Image 1: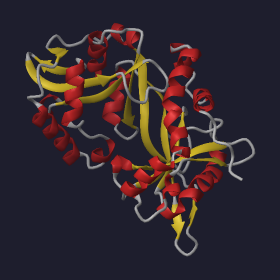
Image 2: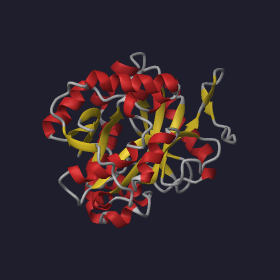
Image 3: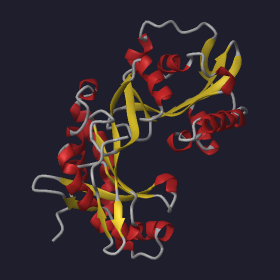
Length: 330
């Protein structure tokens, strides 16, 4: 008999318990519970809505019955449960993984084998490449896991003050006047990808349509250096905010000729001064291996408040079962 699927509010409570203690000083728990409950509604729907599951099956796994794509509340021990959900990197059917962002208590290193087995079993026909877990612990806290994206955040009012580092006079952030420089932004991403091959899997340029939305909302900004266009920064109040009223960084790119000058560390300060609501938190996701972006964010005063980690799967073809063997990270 399957365990009862929790309500969205119960899932919100579990997730709040797993959050970095610093963030619980920034925002009242009651406020976060309301926001997290709204954010977890889809988790429950994906566990019960066969029509939604059928839509996902047609897109990602047409050979499988719809129920294969349903979320599962799985048991990984007497006091440990997880909301296991089948996901696909960038919507690519060839890159499947299992997500277990919400667990009934924060996971420990000795939980990983049981969690990996429990979350793989319902989705074995789809052969996920790894299990993705959330933790407020540092990126390399769990041996044998691979790095993923981290949430880097700070209250807007704190960032406005800055860290005592003087913003260069020539650097400015102003509401974007158009998307005329979108192709230059694409070139900037391509240049970084050519220099650092892993970057293509760590960050991608926002779709033009998305930037158009941010432009219409007034949350797309031009970065200028001495009056010359140097990049884009975009935020939204929508997205994974960890239950905090927040501005979510959706885009931050500097044109190639302006990289390497230390400007990146000042953009969070300028952005905090440009957005209207100082009571919100500025939050964004940066891959743990994107060292330059992480260092720039941290120099500006943003803090790593947790993120995902990947537990790799190896499938035994003759049994169709997934195995996980911890290894020391390379």
